[in-house]
Amino acid sequence: MKIFVLTGAGVSAESGLGTFRDKDGVWTQYDLNEVATPEGFARNPALVRAFYNARRENLAGAVANAAHDALARLEAGLAARGGALFLCTQNVDDLHERAGSQRVIHMHGELAVSRCHACQATWPDTAPLTAEIVCEACGREGAARPHIVWFGEIPLYMEEIEDALSEADLFVSIGTSGSVYPAAGFVEMARAMGVPTCEINLEPSANAYVFDEKLYGPASETVPAWVERVLTQG
Ligand code: OAD
Image (cartoon, rainbow, N blue to C red; front, side, top):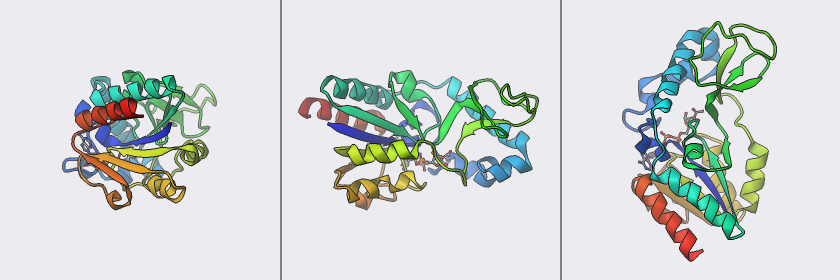
């Protein structure tokens, strides 16, 4: 059994990391055009760096929850049965890794990685981003940014993702509102290839009508119960 799981902010909500579009979500408090676009970074790099520095600080204190733990168990359990989990996340946190997931595809980048906006070199980094950072690869000062896919930029690993979708026996979307493409279109792609689909979310997402199966409730409860079912019933 090959399972493709797509996760979104809802899987980390109970770890205290805010979602984006819920009441009090990040995009109700900040203008995404100012902090999550290349144009915003060109206009005011200090504001953008401060926004992501605060998110790095939040992440440092966060702990993986039962949903992350269950997905790590699913990866190991499927592998032991000759199957595989393809875990693709829109999240830039590293809570899947901290829970023990071995292979995580971060299609929107990673908060704990910095990138040179000039030469695209990346490096692991949890310290605050500043204008004084000098890129070790190209020597440019002032171009350090978070390794995060901003609006208007192309998500990472798309070829690998499309291959995995085409090989999957099941597509499962967890904790995402289904508002941001291309991730929001994965369910349609899976459906078009005849792959069964399941949505696990707090409430019906924008794409709920497309899914074959739907499980609603907090991820810390629904995901462990679903993983248990998959690993016991196959
Ligand atoms: P959203 O904030 O758009 O959606 C979060 C979803 O999680 C909503 O449908 C909630 O109902 C659900 N949710 C909230 N708490 C939950 C819980 N405890 N258990 C289960 N579900 C819960 O976040 P995403 O869909 O991940 O991009 O957003 C997609 C992208 O938009 C993000 O990756 C980010 C953002 O702009 C970048 O930063 C590049």
